[in-house]
Length: 535
Length: 73
Image 1 (tube, rainbow over the protein chains, first blue to last red):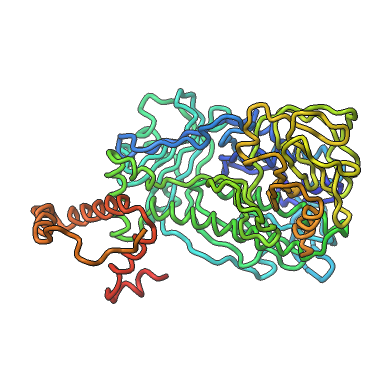
Image 2: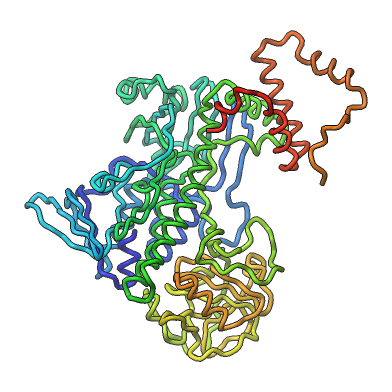
């Protein structure tokens, strides 16, 4: 994924994978709306959505009764669904296909890193292949080699946090069934008393099941089909026809590295931080790491920003990892109570939830991944205008841009630009990119302004430190020198609390970094400088 | 919104105390613990205000010696 983002920005990148295949077993399966939006930016969102199973509803049962259900995206007007379920191997295949289509990305399979030597201006790797070893020097190294991260160990770095004393059986089964595409979670179900269970649909009639086993379960015994089959039959009924595709027994941890940046070595995904699976915050967190990192690395590589900008990757994504760990730990405390009193409160919540709506909000079978709002980021320009809406989903500095349906109003010039880097946007842009707001945000900075009275800016863009900021105007009249989009449903205005003059500065990763009630080119330039680490 | 009210506020304190104990009569310790937990959650939701709830948690935990080592990890 990092390779795709870099290669799209014309940065040459080499991917080393010790294996010769994508993931074995489906592992991560839930990809959140924000991940799909990031994939859209990387040119493979449609691929994943087409292949995957859309869902937004979760049901939580206690015993045999439904106690609570939630809809993660109850409103319309979003291009992407709340979640798509897809086996990790299919997800990886989509990424590999996209990376292979890009000239600047080179994938090297069965190339295993066996030694790492960082220096002040680069990193030298020793790489083992079936045909022998070789040395490889790079300017920057992104380490995304998973939870056990061999490279992290080679560098003598560790993660900190807690490991939970519980075991879970995870199995993917092939089954034709008319269960709905929803997330079903049971506390203490009749088919698996005193423990929890989960059922979730994936693509190609594959289903994920998850059984809590308790700390005393023997992982080797529980992995055997003769142990798994009776559990599945109890859950799915004696008549159900299914085959086990993959099964494993896991424990989990909520841990992270103290810092994700170590000079020219940058850690991302499970290599940097670990969460429990209840909440789909592992893979989705890793995707957001990459989204956050690559535009910064690109600016540094092109000499447009100091390498201090990469410290903000550390600050922003450590805060996001902590948020994921906090949510994941809370879910774990509910699913696997660690003490008698913790168990008593959990049972009290489940018992109250049958009758009292307030308690349903306390039932925690996993708080599903939502994108981090980078509220305390040093790259944000704090609000100067105090009259922005204060709703929980307000587009505060740090929030990822909300999507909404739009229509392009074409001006006199129609230029088509594709995949260009942050620094290369210097032409006036007026182009149709479909029916969704996010597809109008260019790979560099974008100023989203509301109303028809936005002053003319020479060339249709504002420049700070050699980096251009494209202008996308939400208005009703086509303009010759910029993209104008029509807010046909009023949702852009509502989601952004937009009024004539309201302007949002969006980073290349589509996060808001500043906003104003009136357009001010100087303020935009200063906010861009700040977002590039210069202030 | 005012802070946690620890001044007398129950119109008939002895009546309430009796009703509280009546509710627990005949329950095992585990059942009583469950009922207490439910009661705390019901009252907490009724109060709602996080400042008051936090003050109540602090007031309840005060002077309980074992609390410090066990929960402040």
